[in-house]
Image 1: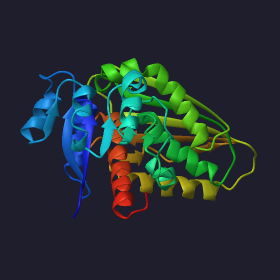
Image 2 (image 1 turned 45 degrees about the horizontal axis):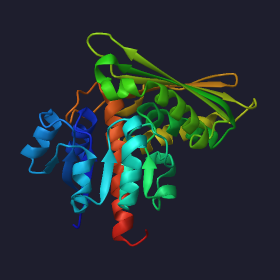
Image 3 (image 1 turned 30 degrees about the horizontal axis):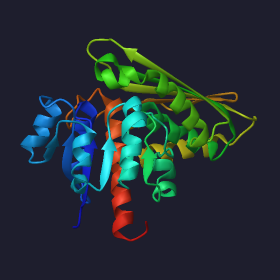
Length: 294
C-alpha cells in the first residue's frame, strides 16, 4: 500500500511514542525525526530504526523539505507560534500540531475529523481536550449543555518540561475547544499533576450542567456510551471508570485513559491519547490526499 512520508518535530517522550505508533500505520511512513539535542534518546531511537535524523531543529529540515509531506509538531506552544508555524506555511507543508498553540482549527477525531481535512494545519488541542470533548459533544447532541467543566488528573511523572511549560495554554485552549468543538455554551478546564507513587493512570472528570429539566436520560446515556466506543477504536485504553451520574440538571462522567505502552509507561495515558489521536488524523489526511479529495 502506498504511504505518505511524515516527520516529527520534537524528539522527546511524545515525539518518540508518536514514532512508534506511526511504525504500525498502513498509510504513514516515518521518514525524519527533528530535534535540537543530538544526544537525545528520541533521535537515537529514530536513528536505530533507520530514519533520517536532524539535530539542529527546523532549520535542518528547511534545507531538506523533501523528507516529509506531513509534519507532526510535538514541541511547545511557544516554539510552534514563534518558529514552526510560519516556516512550514511557507513550505506549503501539512502540519498536525500537538501543542496547545491553537493557531489552527481544532480537531478531535471522533467529533469533527472530516470537517478539517482540507486545512493545511490542524491543532490537536490538549490531552484533556482529546479525552473529554467527545463526551461533552455526545451530551450536547441530545441536550443543551450550558456549562462544561473538566478536570484532567495525570501523573506528575508523565508531565515533562513541555507539558509543564504549556499549563496556562492547556487550560485556555481546552476551555475554548469545549465550546467550539464540544458544543458547551461555556467551558472550563482544570489540570492536576498528581505526585502519587506508584503513578496514577490518567483520570478525567466531566461535569455538564444542562439547560433544562426534564431531559431524555436514556438518550444521553446511549450517546455517551456510543462515543466511548468510537474513541476506543483509536485509543484502546479509553474507557468509562463508572457509569455516568445524573443529579438534577448535572451530569458527571468519569473516564480513565490507559496508555498502550509503546514507548511511554501505561500510566501516561495523557500522552498516549495525544499521539494516538494525532496518528488517526494523519492517516485520514493521507487517505484524503491519495484519493484526490484535497
